[in-house]
Image (cartoon, rainbow, N blue to C red; front, side, top):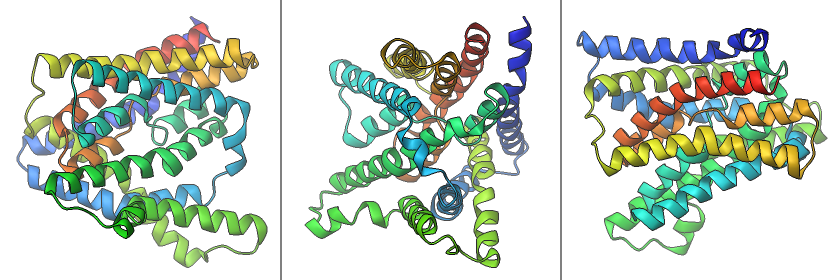
Length: 321
């Protein structure tokens, strides 16, 4: 019982998310916000606020955390979760490139920012545990996924892109640009310690980045109230399957790799297991909205997974205490 009580503060991130989503729902309910406002919020988050947030997070990240043994367990769990979805999707219901990309994102891309940080801070007492997940998602998963979404949209238009267009595709995405700039400034700063953007330049970037998550969550709440509900049948079954992969399969694989394959210490095993149980990120809802791909499916799956994740994290925090 004491372990559960000690883990409760980790859920404050879930409460914060719930308040903002509920506020978006309420504002849409009283008619203050419409679907057009939700679309505008998604565009602002995608093109303006999120790139600034990506830069601010990576410019000060500890890049050496990517190569820790704990990261190996986390990355292995992410890979298995993505593979499970891809195999099941190919076997039961073939989708186009963009639809498969969104489903894969939902299966393995964690809410490491506005949920992972409070969970790491309160349940694990060290926010550095979340750094490898943030980095692998921002540096590899996000650019690759967005490039695939761009390629899927190009394929639908029937245009044959040039080689130059394909090669430069990731770098023409605003989120990838924010990631690359943050990594470059971070890497240069490691070698030339005095090199860093002046405060009067960094502060506006931080301020713009700070509105990214609220915009995403308010837009999410508006969508719950105004956008169509997820269809039943196979679509709903697939949604719950993705929830199970993200909140049960991924943490289970992380625990197996950390405990029995890598033989890590109990503190590390607990950390990677809890982090792997995080729900899908709200970023995926923004991606789905921006590219017009499986928006309702992404919204409902994130909503369900967030609720299930809170229970799973509580259980893991108690069992692995």
